[in-house]
Length: 356
Image (cartoon, rainbow, N blue to C red; front, side, top):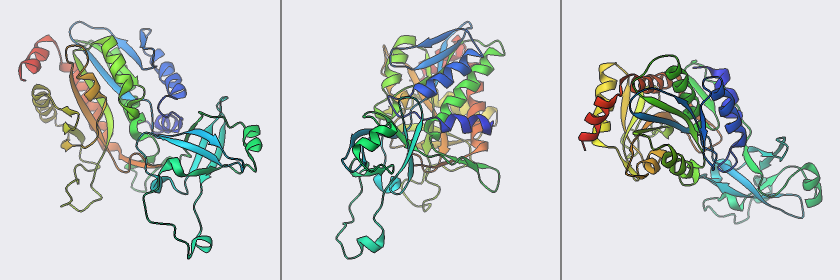
C-alpha cells in the first residue's frame, strides 16, 4: 500500500458535487495508464483496458461527506449545510477547511461552548445538527469574511491528520470513504493494462455517491457493463461489544463480502463466485451485513439489470473527521479485484448469471 499516494488522495477536498480536485487527480493518474478515458456529464470518470469478453466495471467514488457554505452572518460566522450523513456531535470543535474558488484554504473551527460560560445554562442534550452549527474562521464581520474569500456554495472539509498507528498496520485519515476505492480502482486499471485478460475493464470513480448514488446511475447506464463492482469503505463494529447486534466486521480480517444491505441483496451467483474465488486463492474475507448502501444498488437497477456487488474495505469511524483502516485488508481487497479481472470470461459470466 503506497501511503504517500493515499495521503495525497485523502487530503484532497471533494464533497458531493464538488469533486473537481479529486477528478483532476484521477484523470491525471488514469492518463498515465491508458489513452481511453470515459467521463459522463455529472463527472464520473473511467479508464478503459480493452480485451475480449465481458465488460467489467470497477468503481470507487470520489466524494466525501462534509458541508457547503450557505450563509455568512453579520458577525462573520459561517453557516453551512451538511453534505452526506454526518453527525454534529462528531464535528463539534473540529478544525475545518473552506475551499475557495481559487482552491485556497480558509481554516476554521466548529465552535463549542466552554463550561465557564455554559455552566448553569440549559443547553439541552439533544443531538446536534451540523446545519445548526457555526463555523468560526476568525472573521470579525460578514464583509471581513468575504474579503478573506468566503462565498456561498464553497465546500467545507476537515483539516486532515494522516498518520500510521504505532503498530505500523493501521492508517488514520479523513475520506477513506471513499478515496480508498478510488485508489483500488487505479491499481485495478494498472493491473489490467499490464497483462492480457478475458474481458474489458472500466475502472475509475463515480460522483455524488454520498447523496443518493447519483453518479453510479448515469455512468452505469452509459457503459452498461456485464458486471459492476463497487469498491467502498464499510463501517465495522469491532469496537462494540461482541454481542452487539451491529458488531459486524473487523479490521485485519480481510475484505467484506456484503451479502445484504437495504438496497442491494447480493446476486446468488455473484456471492457463490466471490466465495469460491476467495477460498480457492486464500484471500481472507468476512461475510458482512450493512444498513447503508453503495453504488452497487444504483448499478443493479440500470438498463435491464446489471449484476452488481460490493467489495468492502473494513473501516472504523467513517463519516467522521478521522477513519481507520488496516493495510492487510487493503491487500485482500486488491487481490480479490485482480482475480476477478483474471477469471471472468464469457463462460464464467454465464455461470454467474444462471445462478439467480
